[in-house]
Image 1 (tube, one colour):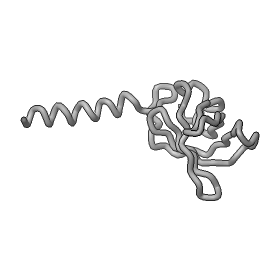
Image 2 (cartoon, helix red, strand yellow):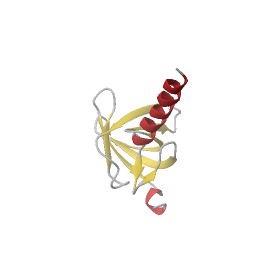
Image 3 (cartoon, rainbow, N blue to C red):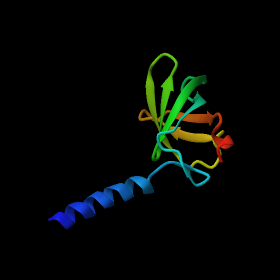
Image 4 (cartoon, one colour):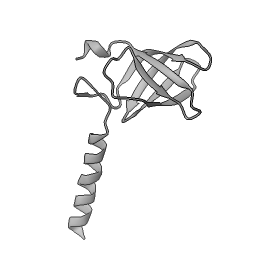
Length: 102
């Protein structure tokens, strides 16, 4: 039983590491960055802070609201991150400063 618990714990940790958001091979999960986010629903750009977690990005808007975007692809270009929210609205995210860390 003890071995099963240890194995389960290691397995869960490995799953989280394998699903971490990365840019240029660096884990960026939990990192908070200044960004702009363009909504294809409103046609507007919004100043946001973005926090990455696996294949999702959490947008924090200036008015205090938050929105989760599910990323379409791996992050290859921090100035062109695409995804959609749970309503199916498409978003483009342009992150400031992420490419300075690579």
